[in-house]
Length: 189
Image (tube, rainbow, N blue to C red):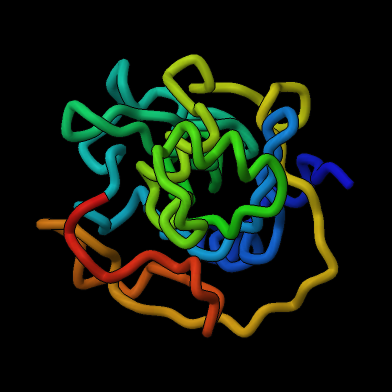
């Protein structure tokens, strides 16, 4: 079942945890969200919006439940879910997925047969799903990308965020404990 606006209208840290176990859907592709990171407008130097509104981060300032997709390291796209209050620039980074459906397509796009390596990092999952700048600032209610509900109540672990030079000390990374698809704690996407 498609999640509606009410689900996304919760504080960013709460949303980052609530997204765990939900399913990201794009056409015939489906994956369970197993790892997220919260990015906050206030007192979070790792957040793209911490220095104010720019053309790049503008979607973060919009309503909750939209996408914020950006390009990083000249190689990877990252998928974020806009959260928090409109005008405050917050988002949840989707860090890793457990592939559920469309695995052969994902393997072809990622050029690997190892299911554990398909979506165990933010750049890997966008490559596997074919998520690009075209998916930026899209509604999760009416756009191609959607988040579907699940009945799973996962056991949640927390840690410091991965790969940040500023704000990395904040314990704003959330993951499903014991899930083999959670990304490794490295600085690479």
